[in-house]
Length: 356
Image (cartoon, rainbow, N blue to C red; front, top):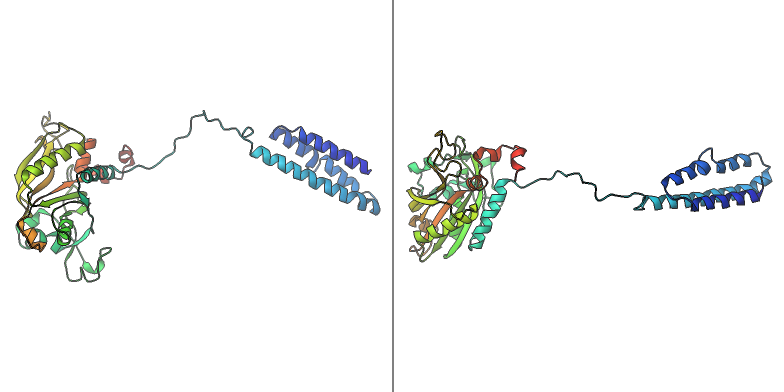
């Protein structure tokens, strides 16, 4: 072995590294020179047969050569791994569709409804789902022994296990607790803290202990609305609520009707119905599950605020006028998306929710 042989090998390695154009050429270079049976290793095998003095001369030179070539090899390798041409990505190839989540139709409908109400100047107010008997019934003109309490089948709670989030320690200590049956308690709490005139809506989840069918669920989402001022009438209510329903549903010619009804906290009371989108009152087999063949879908209860509620709010002036209304958000979603069964909303079936 001569020092010129090592210099010649180094020159040869450098020339071949310059000619490498792709990853395949680089792998061939590695096998030829840097692998265990490569040419560079042959020099190290010859080194073992040399005299001690020769080893001291050729050993460091070979080690320096190997280190330099390996550094250059790794640099070239890294350049290929970062080279867009060597790792070409064809942007014309159709991609793989990623599975992503979607908003539930109840959420979509609630957001749309609130957007409409906000555009009409309504303030959005929320409160706890756990409520006291006073705010759920007593303050709303529903006396303890009044038959109207049977209108709401209530989930009563053991108060020692329940404390609403954000409530004060003693607020519910001596009161009967329940899962609110409507969001009307939010209105009363708001009336205690605010003076007219105002417009507000209270969206939220409510609970009723009742049998389920195509139109009824024991857990649903509701939105209560309230307008109070010095000169509010049923004409105002009819005009506002008809325009809003049509805007929410997206049907300018939707038929809306008002009919007399009873609710303890309003006088007079009204029901607001819209035409059944499923059968339009013309069910051929007489078995429309959505409207029970009446041709109309009950959408909300409403009416002029009962004067006793103003007293419950402890207002100094009782001659205000206002109207209140309560609507089921799922009912609106059924109308907007033409969903024939309310039970689908809580079914957990992804085939249903992914459609929206």
